[in-house]
Length: 109
Image 1: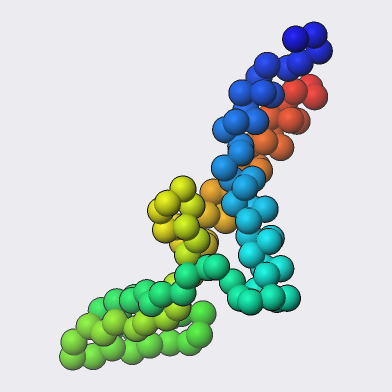
Image 2 (image 1 turned 90 degrees about the horizontal axis):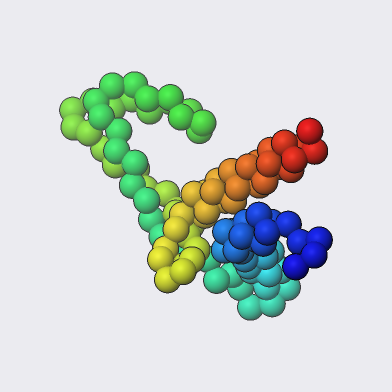
């Protein structure tokens, strides 16, 4: 094809899934706010604290005697049939965007 950057075409396929995740997240958020609710799954995630003092964003935990497990919510998306933590999916998407920007900048020089 005249005027087509074949590298861009092959990269477009590589970027489809993460871009779909972002678009899906946007649509999911709109549905959550305006309609019936989010399709994100909410689960429980345990964080084990051993004996000693632990500093968290919420404060300080001092554990004596036996280790404890604290539970909090864990959010996930289903992507290509597999559950992925929202933070991991967003981190992968951010890394992809950063790589795309770096490649674009390199192409300009």
